[in-house]
Image: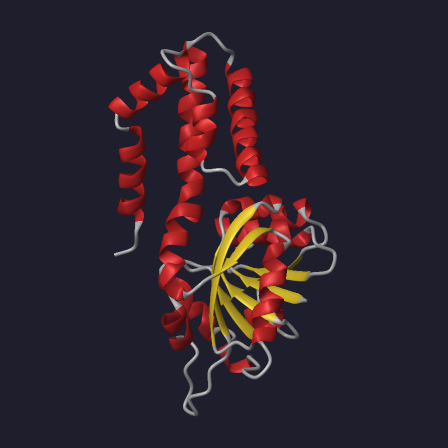
Length: 262
């Protein structure tokens, strides 16, 4: 598959890094300024770069819009007139812009619209470990399958109804920042307890990795695994109780709610 990414911001560049590792994908990324593309090309030699959107989308199967919401229309204006509405698919990672809003960027007098995909990955897509949510409009099953196969190579993918996309945005895309904040807090706690900072980071990362793999492999509810390390009057239950007294679970849920698009 040939993919063109319009925009080399954080998520556009992360997607390019992940896709550039897939030999079966021909990926091009564009940007309005040169400052971001040259370093990206040096990092990923197989990546194609361009400063001309209309030229960059020629022959592309999937064109992914990866710009800020207020720049989406101007970005589309640079290539809409050369888009093949019958064969080229449009993807968008512009948070908060659903398929209707994305589609409205491509309106033309005859009313024809391309197949559109609203895609929400997270920055772990750069290392092929993203949690990606996808929904579509006017796409055939063959097109849905083709796009999902691409993102399946970059982590885990869920093809969902559009009404679930905001939840995916918050829990997975915003959520990676929340996970990083927990890692930072646990590191600081480890340092306070006497670990060197570099050691604390290694310990926390491996502990989280172990917890994730446990749940992936056995499919248990997290509380069951908590019970296995929580003994009566033990150290773990005292720590959990102190965290809950400080509002740990409530603050996580509150943060997720606060992140939901209005």
